[in-house]
Amino acid sequence: MFYFLAVIEYYKTYMTIRETLKNSIKTALLTLHTEGSKISLEHPEDLSHGDYSSNIAMVLAKQTSQKPRELAEKIVKEILKKKPKEVSKIEVAGPGFINFFLVPDFFTSHIKDILKEGEKFGNNKNFNKQKITVEYTDPNLFKEFHIGHLMDNAIGESIARIVELNGAKVKRVCYQGDVGLHVAKTVWAIKKSEEFKKTMSAYELGQFYAKGAKAYETTDNIKKEIVEVNKKIYDKSDKEINKIYDAGRKASLEYFERIYKMLGTKFDEYFFESQTGPFGKEIVEKNTGRIFEKSDGAIIFKGENYGLHTRVFINSEGLPTYEAKELGLSKIKYDRTKYDKSIIIAGNDINEYFKVLLKTMSLIFPDLASKTTHISHGMLRLPSGKMSSRTGDVITAMSLLNDIESKVLEKMTEGEIPEKEKKGIAEKIAVGALKYSILKQVTGKDIIFDFDKSLSFEGDSGPYLQYSYARARSILRKAKEEGVKAKILNLNPSEITELEKIIYRFPEVVERAGHEYSPHYIASYLIELSSSFNNFYAKGKIVDKKDKNSPFKVALTEAFSIVMKNGLNLLGIQALERM
Image (cartoon, rainbow, N blue to C red):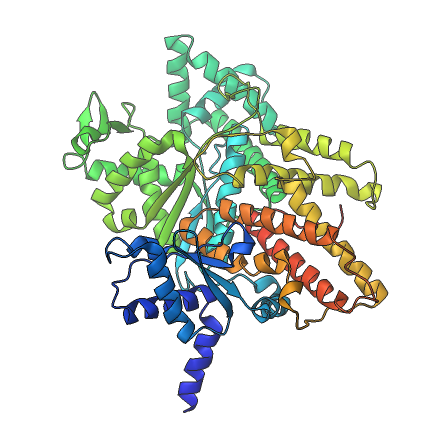
């Protein structure tokens, strides 16, 4: 008996309203001897049309030779015989939509759950016990961290946080290019300049890279010199080159760490091309004649045999290319993290390259290939156009963030923020504005960063979300000062606002964002939630000792602040107590 009651309690706790409604529809269809289909439940845009809506009658009407509305009415009639307690009424609308309206207690009980669960609200166990590595950012040493890396970082960090909230054990991984022709070009330029210093800034390294890249294209002799430097970096055979290399590597890594800290990223594992290159070369050589073939002194993968394109894995100098290094990385990464799934975030400009890489992985490490997912994103651009680190005309991450921060500071002329705190808050707003601009889009599209729209404190922007949260926290401080304590009350249907009808959806959104690896669902939801809260705020005083519902309004405000903070955290955006 005890076991039976425990099972009942389990299902009461973990069966969501969405599952309850789907089960009711399934039961009705079985009673009507109608073969089921995948049951879709959506939230109507217009809340007057219900809290959930299903088009199942329209989907099944043709195969049952019935009119959609007539079938919908039959389904509703069956559901009403054993109506779920969470449902107040069910209506058939339009050509055959089935609209469900939920009881007030459903919404108030969720407010109670949010207050109780706090920062844990929204989590689930969908990916429980799964080890997922998320690889992102992947900058090249000896070059500046540019706005493309910001795009990579924002998406990767958000996906890592989302799958974590879905129950996964996550390892954040960064794969950094510390050897290769780009490094040789920089080291060659430093060596030629006779300006070697033990400490170099990232800006100086970027300028040297641009000089080396430009020189590489001028004469065959310079090209040969840089190729020779590249060989010496790999085999560490030249003391002077080693000295320059070590100093530049150190400067690059310290510079990257400062940026990661600003962006709120802390990696668990770092991998370097200098580590993966030798192993990748060994793999390619072992499989030459079977998977790879020799061509003009190099070793290639003949992609055309698989409907792809040919790529070089070991060049004519006998050095592993990026392809061979990343092939080696897949196994080294697995050996270190034992992942069940490896998610790699990278720009869509390497989509075709990645298809070739996955094909070679499937032939050599089939199990690892099946565990690997490549999520590609578009480019981040400014209205002025594209950038090029090769020419030195590069839009760096720091220059963009500093420009955004300066514009934020211009807006922070008044308010309750002490002068000494303004810069720190402005930096968090700048990061939030940039991240939201990236994450609100469906991953894969190019983004043009618009300063005015992205920094607006009204509408579709990161600062708007941060401001909405700060407003809620200000109200809660006032409630505390006036002694109005949060309390869950029994409300009439007419007293339930739009805010209650949106706030409970957060766990659903987290689940969808996790399954699809899509942060834009979180971003869109938070905008809708903030808009709803600000409408709620505008309609009347929240803290009012004379209002019998004021304790519930305070509870609702606190619940909003919890969900907002949890949602902003999933986007990697700092929730600010004051703005």
